[in-house]
Structures are given as C-alpha cells and as structure tokens.
Length: 86
Image 1 (spheres, rainbow, N blue to C red):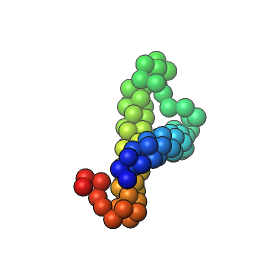
Image 2 (spheres, rainbow, N blue to C red):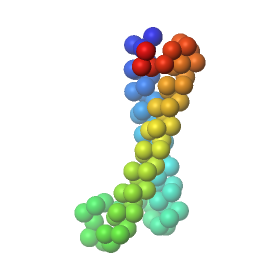
Image 3 (tube, rainbow, N blue to C red):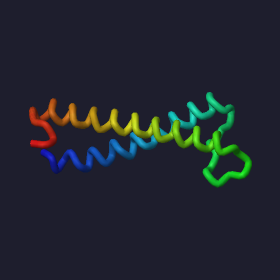
Image 4 (spheres, rainbow, N blue to C red):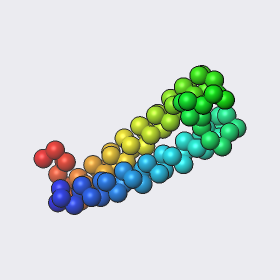
C-alpha cells in the first residue's frame, strides 16, 4: 500500500504548491496592493519589502506543505490502519 502512497503524495504536493502559490498571491495583493511580489534582485523595491515577501511566501508554503503532508498521513492511516512509518 505504501507504493500507492508515493505517487499520490507527489500529486498532492504539486497541487499543494499550486494552492500555496495562489494563496500567497492573494495575501501579497492584500498586504501590498501589488499583483506580483518583488524579486530579490529588484531595484524598484526596498530590502524590507523583498524580505517581507520572502517571509510571507515561506510561511504560507510551509503551512500548506505541512497541512498536505498531515492530511496524507491521516488518510493513509484511515485507509490502511497503519502509520506511514510502519
């Protein structure tokens, strides 16, 4: 059954990444009013703004990844009755 978990986990990770990207864009738009977050090398944005964007993006991606991983582990246990580390 663990063989099935890997491809499903990869698919969920991709979908989670897409969700995190959309969520970050929405949050960034709300915080800054800009459609796009600044690139780290952008001369048009302050260091503070670049670092804030990086902080928000990392936090959102980390939260979504942990949520997706946790849901996958719980779903696996519900279907198989076993933890992933067994």
